[in-house]
Image 1 (cartoon, rainbow, N blue to C red):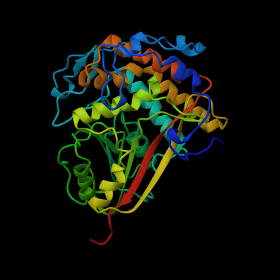
Image 2: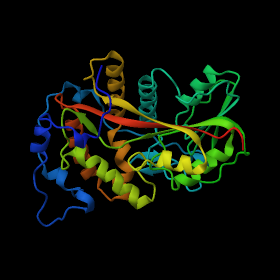
Image 3: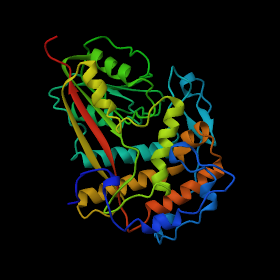
Image 4: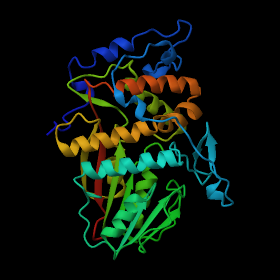
Length: 368
């Protein structure tokens, strides 16, 4: 079994990252200053030589593609950025993830990965006999569909800002367009269980989000919030700050500061903070160990690592395009150069790479 999370990457020491540090140390253009908070300028990645890493998997990933369909419904009038489609203008919504077929495939792979690292469970909250369930930010709808199959007597509603869910679903499952940044169109004390995950970078005010979840839950009902820590981590080593992996989280944080939608949800403990202030009790926090790549010896962790790597490498450009390009102003060429460095570093066979997801559960008090 692989070691469990015992600390941040900054607390780990070792020599496995020496090659990464050596290949990322080329100085930027003398006439171009580094960005604030230790972020290297975008042009740095064009000037820096790629590390030589032998990985036959390079040829397994095709070129980027996307498809735009013109539909009459306003929610399907997708915005287009560098050939990738994003959700239509809805409320205060602003998602950084594309909604085209390539990214849908990546999201589905991540769903299977998360289910694996949770021990083949869809959720961790101690929910019993749920009758009405809300999945906020349902994405491709896989979680809601699988929950509906598991609990055929429950009414399951999945909400999102983009209609990418399948039309063939269990009879007890339905999907609705709704922006979770606004007041939710739900009655008070309605749901036995509310599930929300991977909303980091999309939510303007987490205090409002958790207050709405609290309002909509029945007394005694449970909320489960799952969010991603955007920093890469390694076992037995330390990630150099000027490497592509080291810069990754810094650029995400800078993008969140510009949009007002923080990417520091896990770093700043926003889930537990605002759940407690909203009135939730019995709050529990669990960090999920998510391997990246096939390095773990444990078969389940190895499979999870293969899935997470496939999901990210299938659409690496799609994950970062909106923040890097539309928000921070990187050119497509600069993004391609950066992605080439990031891909090479992530494929370094000497690195045991992982990331973490934080699961926070809380209950609305029974007696109000």
